[in-house]
Image (cartoon, rainbow, N blue to C red; front, side, top):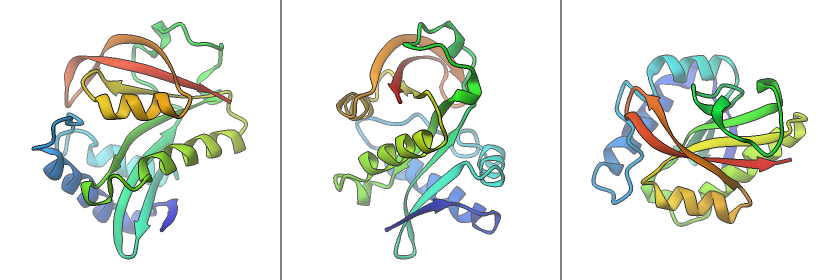
Length: 173
């Protein structure tokens, strides 16, 4: 398997990966809440690819997983009592981390999170932060098991879920 930042020629394949993930998770017990064309939107995907922020994990010719790493957080993060004070450029925020169901149970999500932590550390970041849908128990367990500290549950607004409870986590570097 190979992890790398996607390039513009791959954007349709990246979008197809997320749409396939959304379709396959439709009947899952713990849904990510994502919707085709809304989250992750085509605009977000292309902007993330152009910014070298969108990472894909390739298994043969199949995208097994993807995530976005940047410094952008949604409105509400500033209300959290984080463990350390840091400006946005000193924090890596994980977005749209997903693993196709056919690759789940193989440690790929842990690998992706470790890579997010490693990348943030190499870039001199102070922390890695993220939010998880309040009903996404597997993701909450994953982040907790990897050393992320639960900070708070607040309502955040995203186009796909509306105003919904999200749990916020932080990993100090």
